[in-house]
Length: 360
Image (cartoon, rainbow, N blue to C red; front, top):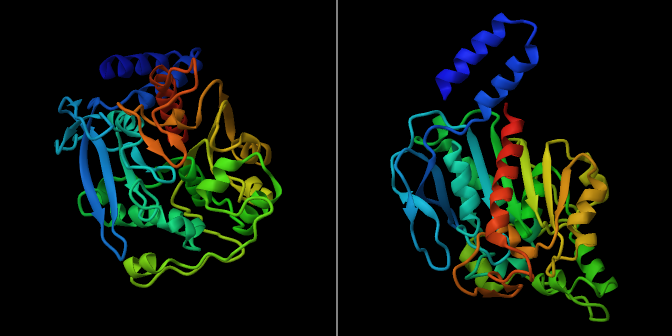
């Protein structure tokens, strides 16, 4: 395939009356996935007062197999050697509140097979085993900073750092992970907006309950840092200020799927300058669209936004193999008539195309 493309490009270059053909062939040559076509899997632990567990998906020439891992069944080759071809870039994945690093394994394996290193982290203090960070007072700053710390570690890693091409770093996030990647892109959170929102509306109960925020008519209490959380952190991070700014200029493009977003200021959403792909669930029963995904689309006209008809909040996650109850509902459940497995072929193509277009 590569030889055919090279010959076609040479021919097109000689025939100057076909400049469009030459341009199209050049684009095809760049966007064709790396020859590996398979995904390896390793685990990395970033040390610190709160160690961060990271699932690393990467291109390999060794054929993968379905590996049962709890409710997930990624198709990977654990510990396989890394393909010799240069990486196309690094993609960081941030899961939703109470999530898991394997929750987007199908998207991660697709991007790895396309030639990317994919780092899917388990957020300390906001994962399936521990959501203590939600009431810590530094949730909106700490979540994005955890992603930046993983990026720091990978760039400094003697094996991965030299392989990561400069200027080709992206981030993908779902739900609270969508908040996380938008904050890394430069959107600014105003934590007081969360409390004000829940005290003034009654039609966003999923957000308010997951955030442990007072509902309309309830008194407002300042949530202290839980003793257990502070002890686990050693020196607990500073409390969030009135405006949270945690942009990471190393990240050049983001994909936000059903993002938690009501806390962002409209002005900061408009000011985001890097490419953003926004996906909104048409039947989101966890985050009410007008306050979250559609809110971002309204105030970030530069984003490439679309709504997935019939999709529930968890449509962007891999399909678990058994029911997976959570504080937000059953992660494995889908709205009637929505085929999550079938949709993911489209999702993977759209995300891969968007990211590939940024680094042609």
